[in-house]
Length: 504
Image 1 (spheres, rainbow, N blue to C red):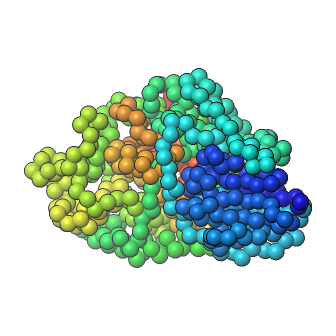
Image 2: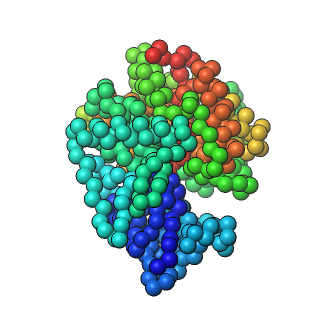
Image 3: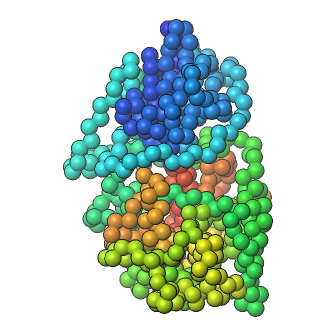
């Protein structure tokens, strides 16, 4: 039987697996190898020996199995050295047979698979560990207990995350006897550890974890209406942006690169300033912010109120140095109110919140909207999700202008301000997202001081440049930045609302 080695690059880490007989890869047991990729089906792909061939078959997965960029289905396909399988949201598997390296093997055709959809995720109290043992097709047995054992798992995962971050991913687990790199914590965190800045207890380890964010559907530029703000209003003069310009900036940002891109391209060098310990500072500053009177917006009506009071202002959807892809998850349905006590209710005409929305709709930066028109309601939602703290604007512009000057491309901004109900709705789209856990939760994006920058379309050179800039600005006490892995692969940036970092 020929010797096959699988070189796996998944969101939860890089590893090598020696295939002895048959291996099924998926998101949960009974898959023999469980990976921390939310885009995988429970049983996604099986690789196995038959006679003197190595074969692969798709297990009717949601997002499919791609062999050298071509989606496969039906009968098993023969694998050769150098072949590349793409599964889930971002997992890549390079095949090596009888020690033949990829360099000596045929070069796969560079065909990009279509973007993944979310796999069927049934929330569980505790997810499977991201590393599993697969031997001769045997079942993986994993026991994750509650209580004290959960604490131990989370603590160990955190240590692993920090070790990998600081040491560039060296060290070891073992799958089928092969040496592997440590698994990142994202695949080990129980589902209950879900809110980075709040939770059941002040001492929750939730506070220490900052590698996962809610996944927002990116904006379809064809659904965005042009904004024609009143030039007489100085604060809104720069809002005059066409949807065509937004689409052009998007194309320019995503144009092909020379070099490897992705979540962990070769040569990625993460500064210590972007490690997860910054979450503690963010939580302290958010508590201070609430203590000085800031009321987190519970719904879109309260975002509208903050816009009318000028507590938050609208960012243009595109400039030379950045463009916004936020608001893709905004719907066309009636506006609703939200409270933790009474839940969600439709906002009725004549109510105070409806009057607030009407007041904004009558003159939203020089434009009028009809609250009875579903498409108008969606446009208002999109615009409300572009709200920002005024102190945060020059910080974003500084990063974006530096990137533009260096690489000639705009930055992709994927999140700005959210209301609490919108944050909760996003929780439902990503099983690994931070869930809002009651009134004590402090999601940073509800503050108006946070934004996310996409990065997996960038090369290591681009990512290292942006991270060096963010680290420099963090040392200057302008912001707190964190690197996020997983399918989002972004930088989360938090601005001190008063320009002063918290005392720690």
